[in-house]
Length: 538
Image (tube, rainbow, N blue to C red; front, side):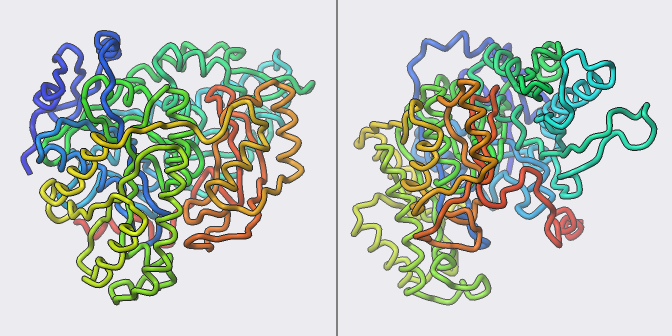
């Protein structure tokens, strides 16, 4: 692997050095003024990479996204990749890094996974500045009449730490502040991260943070961030974080990495700022959405594309024979054993995701991430299932062979872009009631029998209606491991009731977040964290 100076990567996109702010030789930020310079160009084609329901076997969605970029370069097609920034929570937790694997990675991978260009630090600092000012305001006389029991803004840390889910503040002497309960979210679950990634530009970001609801008064009136008079302070902290980051694949193809909200809690897409810029820079833009198509892709298609006026030209659905066999009932330790019955049963998960995506009238290609344990009979069976359903597909082996292992997939995606027009549209209308929007997703995407709203959820829905904010998109927060809200129900569960425990207005992001099942906004570490496994690297 021989990486190029980042200025050479920029030149592949015809980006002049004057728009680059380099961080060493391998990373750079791109100045806002570039978009203003090229905003009248025609947009390129947009390819969304998503996946089947994740399993312990792994699907390799980021690896496949990078692989597709490198594969397109092999067939002389100019393309640009947009990815999310990794969070330290998964990096040191269960998942590990998020920069691809094998011979298809974005580089410098360790820098990207860790401190990168400081965006996560800026977000975390901004989030905690807001919390500090709220508590200080109350302590210093509470001119805004904030009810300490109705503060909705939480502190943040970009780390998995279950001990911080619920904490007590102001303990000890009175000079230590107001005594109250609080909690931490992981940085990537905060509304500020969502706003970073859904804002069209710097001015839109500023307008959105002004209207964040941080608390309610004793009279149940909302208190907005602008009332705290720290909007400019947040803008100063976020100044550089609003600029997309340019890096490269190990095969020297360009990639923008910017923003990274969780997809099982937030909307799971990289920044709209980066995507809009990419579409002006390249004839083909590849981007991915977090977790499976019922989460990341649904939110990309119903939230990001709608807000950003994006036209999705093709979706790539990533699957593996190993993962499909797990959905078919095979234990993880038995995945290397040929099992055609389990593969046939598990393929139902892939088909449900495929037909869900087709409801948006977007052409879909299934990308099959090839593993050495895939038997000839299993490959033939899965191929026949896809052919019977007239689904375009390609096997890819980028992990072992880099771009050369993804040429078939690249050609298939290019063929679909050239021959199958997209008539993309969202699944629901903003004018629908909150309850109907949630029910539409639950029944059409998850295939739930019905939706059950808790008393708290009903109360908060009425509160949102009273604020006249019920015409927003809904952002579903649920487990990534199942179509349902129960992580143990693999494959394609039916006849389940989706339980909505709470509904939260994210006024700056223009989201209504719907909390289903036992979803948590601050994950915990597993018994053996990835951080411990790093000892083996030495």
